[in-house]
Image (tube, rainbow, N blue to C red; front, side, top):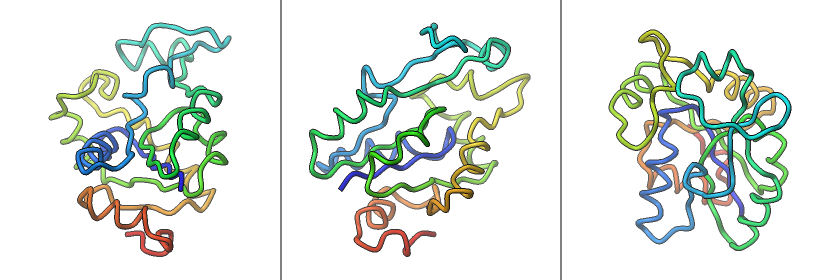
Length: 172
């Protein structure tokens, strides 16, 4: 079973993937898979990670996954759980058996991002206001009828939902 769980910054993707890995589960945060993703300009050329949201927006930079790399990576596993997000993830969902959106309220999201020690949260704030990169992801997930899971559930609760045969009907 190949499962993708995506959501906005602060929804818990990295934390959940890391906790599940501690339990011996093939769970991966896409930001920790070397070679999968990079920043690109509008001409498809790789660029350095922008330091601020203004830089990414002004220069039309996109954070994208390599389809070939992702396909090769997940094909190494019978059961694998991928947690992450990218600008082109909707062109990758056919690689997965099931896909879920990790939903989080804006206040919890802001608190998690502000307290994060594992990521570059500078890209999530502009003039002290939270930049909601994930709003577009949520809208697209709704359009595509992708099941939502609450990002406030524990990693074990989320695993129970996404690993069950009827996971789509057990969402919260």
